[in-house]
Length: 425
Image (cartoon, rainbow, N blue to C red):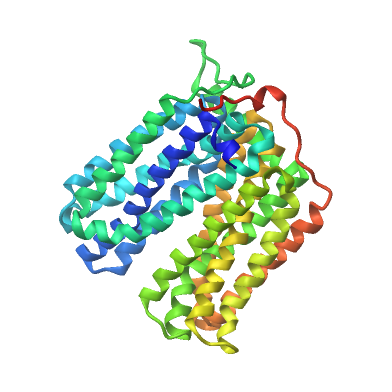
């Protein structure tokens, strides 16, 4: 893992992402708290979540086409600058009459972000090479969950101490910090990619046709390549489960276990500890692991631990074991993310990676919303315990599905020219 982090370009990307994600968590915790304090309305607060998912549903896979055409480092730099500027109108949001500003800022920021995740995950293989993908993705997981642990804990505190203005300025500064890190990154030369015609005779119709051809190429790649088809089937099933879990966990904690919102909030921090531990473990194992097998095994174990979390209180009541299982489930949770992203990066050539990760964002947004809708429609009728047991069972079955369907898959080797990176001195 340290060998991967010593690669100068990746280290700059990783450190910038860590700082930016801490700022994002400050905002993602602080802004809903601010809206609820301002309005006292759960409905208006829930709109924040819905608005953040809509751009991924509508724009995700199309954004991936642009990521494959543009310079990814420059795309990330411009997008982070735009997201910093997008926050500025929040400085004028002080009353219910100006609440619309919050929703507009949330929507615009989510739209711009659709370019960031595909660009970042398509850029990583260029910076570290094939042999270090598992370690690089493990480090990315560690940064995400460290930010979640720190930013989640500090978000409510910051909104109380410095208000929305202070949180806005802090988050904006973290975006600018990423821009500085990106300026120092030197990216290896990419293979030639398709681009829109640039002659003066280009018409809007031909530009749209060319764009759609590139988009369809990405969709065909997902359908025609077995590994990608299996991965996206798994993503769809698990995202439905995530939607169910996100809605019904608080119901389970309060109504079934009889604990309050403090315990619910603590669970997220405990899981982040497990995620960090999983990232450290996987980072040490690195290229000795086969991502396809690791993915299937981790998804199966994740589902089984999920079932224990939901049902263990029937046999062994008590908070200690409940918290321990939330730490434990974070380890295979990280294993799933690291192995899935490593597979996507290694199975797809550089010219298509943006489209594949863009499609991932769309599938995740769509299926998570479906899961939330199912939880809302069936949660009261079937009960939180049954619904969450179904969710855990789906995770376990998706892992077994991957183990069987991808049992013979080994990572594909990319051209050696993509595996060069500069070491820190």
